[in-house]
Amino acid sequence: MKTIGLIGGMSWESSDLYYQKINKLVNEKLGQLNSANLILYSVNFQKIEQMQSENRWDDAGIYLSEVAKKLELIGADVVVLCTNTMHLVANQITDQISVPFFHIADAVADQIVKNEKNRVLLLGTKFTMQKEFYKNKLNSKGIEVVVPNIDQQEVVHTIIYDELCLGRVLEKSKQDYISIINEFVQEGVQGVVFGCTEIGMLLSNEDISVPIFDSTEIHVNKIVDFIIDDK
Image (cartoon, rainbow, N blue to C red; front, side, top):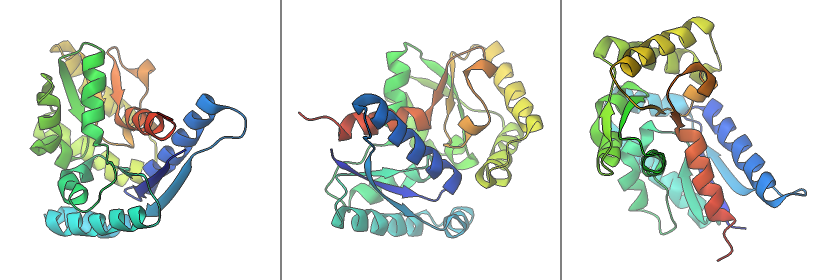
């Protein structure tokens, strides 16, 4: 089995989801007492969040690329970024490593195409919703991406940072998300992308009338398929 190098801590709540989901899926596929070979490097999210808020994306890219190099040096066969937003600096990371790196938006785009959908609502941090790095990946596969309006984006973003990243799952916030999603479902979106690794803590398929594309679940499936492929 190949070894996964996880760059986590952004937030640690979502890194916990990655750890659990990867190991559960490996065990489902291989049985007995099998679990994943992995190395987790968990960064201090406060440091990353400050770089985000100060628009210091190059600094964040340099920092995370150094972490990626360390993971490769100690034996990672693939490097995984356990967050959606920081894939904005994915190119800086891939420039510094020689092992595979699976971009989360590529995996999401492939899953949307597989499900024959071509118009989706993207939810995530304001950086993910406003910048082009994520949308471009989906657009390149012929997928139209819709995002909430600015006020709605602020609601989505605040719930992520002030609640979900701290492990707080509130019913009011769930209903706020559902209300936003339903507005766009009525306007014809065919699915909803959970473009933040924590959103799955708040919502599930049962809450929404259109398919969800949970980036964490999709990313994990791609990673596990890679590490247990004996070909």
